[in-house]
Length: 83
Ligand SMILES: [Zn+2]
Image (tube, helix red, strand yellow):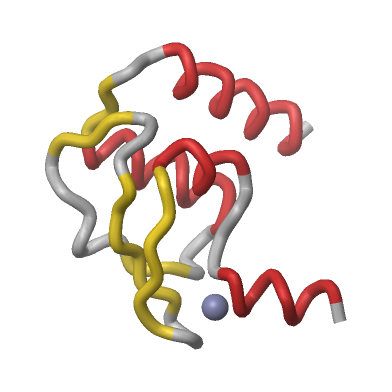
């Protein structure tokens, strides 16, 4: 059920070019929980904006809104999961 919800949110966000910070954080939290710090995300962003996100474990990284909401989080965290 949760996965379907996340997928629908992702489809929703892809359809709209402009996303505000609040919406972005809500959607990001639905996917990642409290894994990341979004305090450096700008107020207005677009799907392909590259934004600074801070991983509480590995620190700052940059990712596009589109990729981040598709599930590409912190590179180091992803590596860990594969191992
Ligand atoms: Zn990380």
